Amino acid sequence: MNTQSSLTWHRVVLWAALLLFAAWFLTPLYVMVVTSLKDMDQIRGGSLMALPAHVTGQSWSKAWDSACTGTDCGGLRPYFLNSLYMVIPAVGISTTLGIVNGYVLSKWRFKGSEVMFAMLLFGVFMPMQVVLLPMSQVLGYFGIASSIVGLIVMHVLAGIPSTTLFFRNYYVGLPDELIKAAMLDGAGFWRILWRVVLPLSTPILVVTLIWQFTNIWNDFLYGVVFSGADSKPITVGLNNLANTTSSVKEYNVDMAAALIAALPTLLVYVVAGKYFVRGLTAGAVKG
Amino acid sequence: MSAPSAMRTPWLPKLVVAPSFLLSFFFIYGLIAWNGYLSLSASHMLPNYEFVGLQNYADLFDNDRFHVALKNMAIFGVLFIGGAMALGLLLAILLDQKIRAEGVLRTIYLYPMAISFIVTGTAWKWILNPGLGIEHLVRGWGFPNFTFDWLVDPDHAIYCICIAGIWQASGFVMALFLAGLRGIDDSIIKAAQVDGASLPRIYWRIVVPSLRPVFFSTLMVVSHLAIKSFDLVIALTAGGPGYATDLPATFMYAMSFSRGQIGVGAASATIMLATVAAIVVPYLYSELKVKK
Image 1: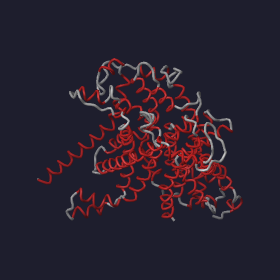
Image 2: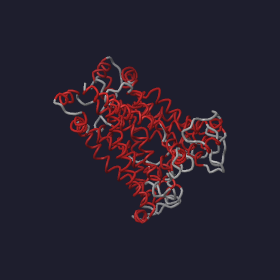
Image 3: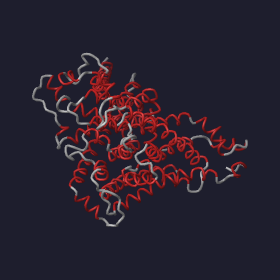
Image 4: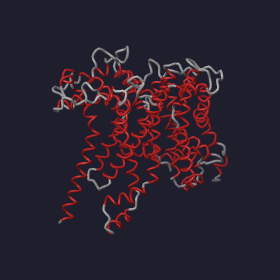
């Protein structure tokens, strides 16, 4: 009887702690959502946590197409589109290169390929500050500084080490016998990749696509350094919007803008969270 | 592998990876060297390849602002890494108690990692702002003298960055530790239970020590996150008030891209690289050696 009640007592404390932490993680999101739906009168007069007195979507539409980011007042829409134009090719190219690199580094090893892999891995960890200054020279030399193309190039180069790592580590786990059997059937390098390896790659492909999408969508550093007036990504747009000093600070518009910027990756996370977590842990624990 | 078709084109795999490897090595090592050279040059507004030796490094370490950035890095490093690791481990242990709603709770704990640091910074800037944020909220609860103005206080603003950083990253740490906990053999724990060991004792003496490898790789990832922190500072405080919350990454950005001190900026980037390399290279070396 005694152990029974102490067990229940344990569960109560445990659940209290778990729910308390859940509240701490959810509060900022809650505050963002309710703030974005209030009008400025209620924000100035009311409490941070209060529900909106009358729900208004005004700040959302303002954040989308008429809020000021610095001097121009077109909302976040152009930035959102820039991010979209940037993220799709950048994710596609870096993932494709990762597949091919990973395939060679696991199934077609050659002398020195392991050393090359180790050297590439350093690119996963190095602080990118170290390439910013020379890279802006390189992009300028090729005439793609301050453009979406330049940003795509930057994201592809920065992404190759991790995409290669993901596919290489996954393909190491595929039995070599599969490849050998396909060879005996007369299949070559490309045919084996296309007909044998790729059909087995769905899980790691999803992990990599999500990982790259999240990273590139959320990137701010390259966006702020390498973009021009017409090629700024959403994170830069949001930061400009939230830091534009106007006569009246419209927190509801700021919060709506922040939610717009967060929606695509949050959506992916909610739909495919399992794969997102796998990417995080794969990026952290090598092998 | 010596099937006929493979023999016909033994050079093909090498040829296929050559372009992306050449580009990557140029990107990683070529640009590191280039940056290193810039750090030894007389570059100010524009790159200028006149060699000036270690002058930029001397200027860097004479620069008050860089000292502030290093001091903040130390504060942020200790609190952010320590806080995220401790909270992450606690969450992982709590979630490991056969919780029915584990999936939902895990999703809640980890979602901040899916959003941009700029979004996190914008949200926390609103929550922590002294006028209408937490201060206002607590005063409304009946504490009219409550003050919480850390965000605009040069001595305390760095702690706001720690709070937001821990909020964002501890779910990530939890995910890593949880994966580690799930890898522990259940029978050891059962045996200890049979011997009458209490739950906290089992965790402290058996489970936590066996998380050592996970602990190290997590520590590495989180410290690396800390050193690279840039977005969060820009969105939350923009390095301010003044330059009170500068970190090396924001210092490098300010010197290189708005203050016209490219040489000094490059020198600070090299210092960041050296710091990360000192942590990462031994780790990568041991990881790759173990696998052989």
